[in-house]
Image (cartoon, rainbow, N blue to C red; front, side):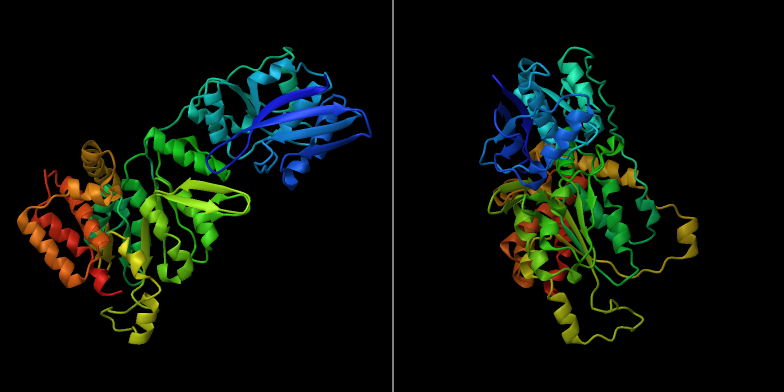
Length: 501
């Protein structure tokens, strides 16, 4: 029967649903039709497949060819189905055996010469293929990335001829050796580069311990961007599961894979002209945005008031839930977005309000309008508010006194984070309201202090809980069994901007 079936994988959010490629040859006017809710790039594959088959030394059937991509109601996009379509045509025309196709899944875009080009989203496809217990045939350029999921049946090929020789038992393809993945952390930027700003360093150490969100307010040149860019160097390395989640999102965006940065927390710093879709994701076929690319890492927003206010407001829900749901007419997708927000801003439009030099000429109305670009609900979701003031640094400070390195700080952070993970299996900044009440119990003196602070500062319940979580991180750094008055006082001190913005 002139019918062949091959399997491939589609793309739907962070998942890779199974796509059944059915190829049928029949009599009639020669032609090739693709059905199954295929977009333009998929329909154009008929021209790529035809040239690839001919240039690989096979015969393209001079018959009516119908290709069905099932399920029919799932949108298909990209050139990832080219290899499966070509093999289905060759099997239906009896140029290769059709019975061998059922144990494989095929991914790859074909060039006109028959070569295999890499595709995006290879990691979720390899993960789904492992669960289905099939062999995955993929382009050679995707092999190193696909090996991250430890699938023992990964076969890489460079062209269509190699795949067909393997299926015909002429020249078998053997699984490649597992790739070596580095778990060592090596950063070009180090905290020892920052001289002075001891309060800011202390605050970022606390933030790294509990995965707390931070906003830094200060004039230009005080080191806000420099401090933020060095935060990843003191974060704990990613676990294997976290690294895999991060790599899957990067794979969907076809980001270059670097095995040496496998355990590095991601760091994303979008420009303030970024749109809401660029930040949270979107498109006709939903793609991850910057907040998902920063999953398990840091999202740094420099010059925060320069972002469009509507763009900033889309961060509010993901900051609470750690997920972003994107709905379109044809498709819905969910992407993880558990990121640590680090924001920086100037105190006024010119940047020098409060500077001892007195160079600021901004009016109170201009300053108020500038700061009101940051909404109260967004500010309420940021755990720590940090003022970074200008500090004189002498020549001796930069040459004779060695600042603390990131490696030293990271050791303390890892020890404190392990205390939190042992206690509640998650960082302090991720605790829910109920969990906060359970793990952040206060003695009477501390409770009285927090009640007074809530009354005087007008803190919301969300800010109240965030103070408790920061205090718990401070206690973990101090290796204390519970929160005391010093830990709580320091945590309250990091809510200063509630009175100023």
